[in-house]
Length: 239
Figure 1 (tube, rainbow, N blue to C red):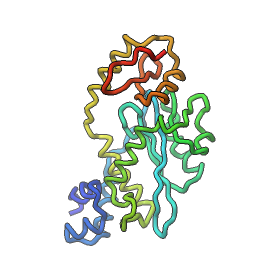
Figure 2: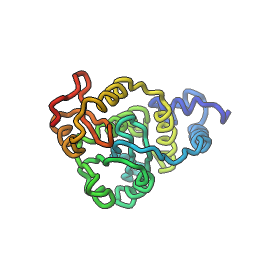
Figure 3: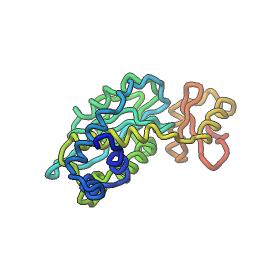
Figure 4: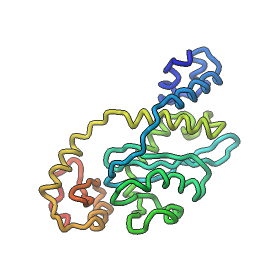
């Protein structure tokens, strides 16, 4: 039945559509049709309006049809890992600007990207931090996408025949990841302590530079970005 959610669960567990069809004894085109219906039935996500302390942007390279290069661009909240938006398209500035239209209204203290020059065309220079140090959360998302979606596996027989099915698969998986009840007690505890222990005169740029040196983690408190280390005490010598 089209209402069955088994194909939706299977697609996010690393199975391709043909594999799902063999397991359920149905044609893979039926699986494809069910997935499209499931994606269309998802509640329309209201535009993100809450302020994000730091936003990370990165691209994931894949192919469709006969090795046509395709790019999946995503933006996440650096603290909580929630996906704020994503687009699929060719490796062009036009595709990147489509993602920018989804997140440019969000109040944030900065944007972390890799060294791709295309980001310099639309991200304000004062808020742009180009370094792999500032893309740890989005790189983690890329790893999960490649792990859970067979069409994104490396060296695999599974691939997307159309851009539509790539977008459908990403939409279903991202909806699932965004609604997971992630436990971040350590993050909350440290963020609360930051309000009391960190010097107020420390600037965001100094904190971000310290993050690049010490490979710490970013948190927001009192309108600034601070650096912390998991598994150790709060840094007292941040100045």
